Image 1: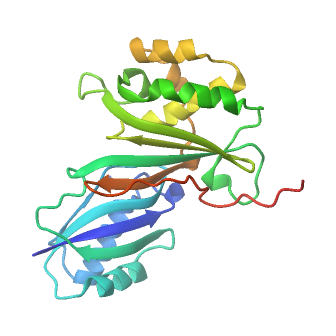
Image 2 (image 1 turned 120 degrees about the horizontal axis):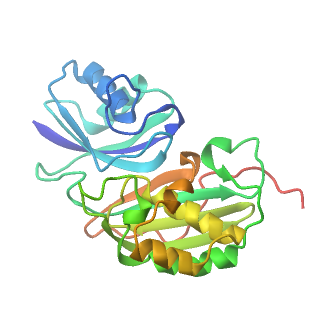
Length: 263
């Protein structure tokens, strides 16, 4: 049995997240269905590097597939893409070590969030349109409060009693590109809805309705307030999954243009 490493992109709008669920359409479920057709068997296992929530997209999800086959990786990629819907695409498949594990061996994940400062006819499914004027400088000044090994109990829908809420955030970058505000968050791993709640709080800072002191209090004392501010999934992309020795992305680029500026 061979172990294959898959690089996958998907537009998550139509899916109930990555992980297989009963009576729900998921990205992993679609990939498993395609693999059954290609390999003409259900004797295989497919593991992703981690879950993405309903409506969240991925620019480069990583998975590993254990299967017995004589097909070359490039042929497998072509055949699987023939079976997959247009909003899921296998970018590359390569043979890997039998010891490689897509989730356990990942050392960091990078998420990109796109906020639009104007209504868009083209990018609605890929941005969060915020009508209010945002103070980007205030948002930028607040991001460093999240960096480091912190307890993000206030920034997750997970049950703190069931798992650790301590997460290492390596960096948060914020950049303006035209009418877009791009936020990249890199961390060891992420809790359920953590990134979207961080973005929601930063948006409140931009609106002038929240201060650095509020954020500090959320991190040092449990609060339900960030949950009320959770940003929509439409603007969130799993950007990269990093493994030991891999170089990190440097430039932050928008996933797509939202149209031409008039002035």
